[in-house]
Length: 306
Image 1: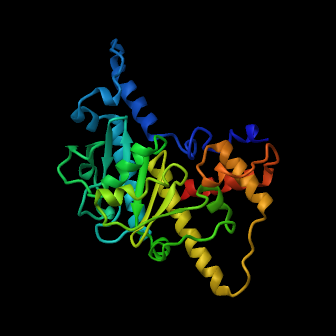
Image 2: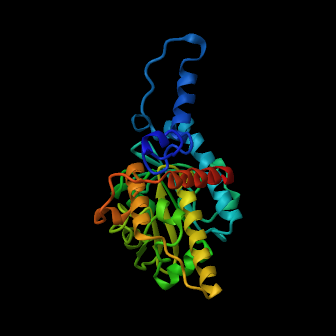
């Protein structure tokens, strides 16, 4: 059943990777077109990690990534997920470089020239602005989990309210939360911007794409900046919905355990991380067409909002 649905359900290759054409692929296509313009024979295009930092920073891939970072930054600001100069966004550029937002700049004011190029040790290789000190958090995630290609850190109010309590919303209530995130983790408090702070996520980053940072905010990783920002939206909506539901004063209705196992089976097939996959018996068959349609509808709504 799922094999037929793969034509319409995204994310088969990795975390939601097929919901939109990956930006890096667009950049590579642009580079290829430029190299063959005029019909002249050109040598094979070098990989990003094989060229100089300056050339990498001005590559078509980097240009496309900058646009995606800026778009996500504007969304975070418009949705009031960041305030002041808070929050930061990064994306892997090849295997050696990272593009990231700078320090002391509102995400609502980002422009292409503001985006910095860093190596995996946090050294700025290109860009007029200083990098955010919290880039160290992003770099620890990239080093610990090769599936992480983009990271978004911000301070949405409902998510951060849970971070202040050191807790997360209960699982089993909202299908989108179960499917795209599953149990979120809670990292212990450390002073933001320090190496100790960056390392707080290491016990969780392989099995959790969404981590609350105690007394601070939230960090999400995915295969693209767009998808990492989606995870922030999904988690924030879940936190808000749970708190509103509690105010109604009626008992909460939990998803039956058998249906949770269906969701986990689908996550396993799609390659979504979930700590429960390590110790839950997953049915070999039985993923309902209704669940598949729900996934398609949710992803369609997210794409429209982006």
